[in-house]
Image 1 (cartoon, rainbow, N blue to C red):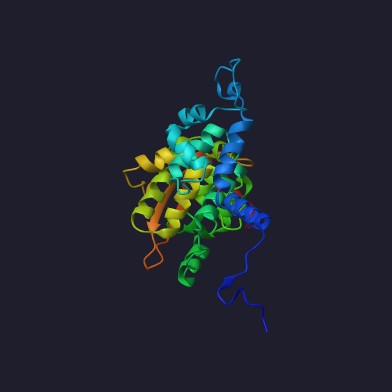
Image 2: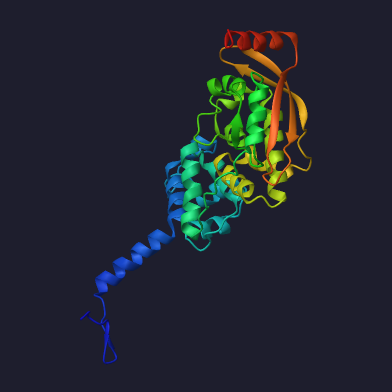
Length: 301
């Protein structure tokens, strides 16, 4: 017969030390975000962020007010975050704090996870909708032209061998689920791959904003993630984006084997409920045309 916690109106009490330890553990678990922010703040010296050191500093690292000024938030709000009284900061606030604290990409991902853990929120992993067989067959017919199919949030779902020749050496396809926007903002190699990175970044942020505004949950989740992991480089573009990205244009790619390529692209909506787009790259000048033709010839001979 199991022991009862209550018997004849009397509740069995846990030892005082046990209750105190349990409260401490619960408090630490619930305020992991605040603890992380404070610990990081206290490891940064004023000189690291361009502030005078001074001689009368009782606080290790940055003062709370100094970090608040760097992040563009109020001292009162930062205090609430550090003390666990607010566990739902916006992605923009977290991105600004990550920038001010100089967090690495891995630390930004960790910060994003801390927020989710502290708020009890989880991001359900939803598998992208599959590409229809007829669309895959069309990709086969496009070989060796670089082409791919992506969804609204920028996941690359299928591609030609020609696109894999273009994208794999630069690192775009390294992830288990390659994503164009995450690569542009989250991989340092993207700035080398795209000489016109600023324009490409504007286009990718605009495309993600358009998808999120139309109610695409996966796009909204990715936007929140990048607001933290990529900081203001993404956040300001996402917030300011008011124009739909162009469905046609020219991109410059710097390929490690083929050198610089100028590629004209066409982005076409695939009919159906999947919200997929087919993107096809064509040479935009004679040099790029010769390079792509040489590659195609080498792989068909």
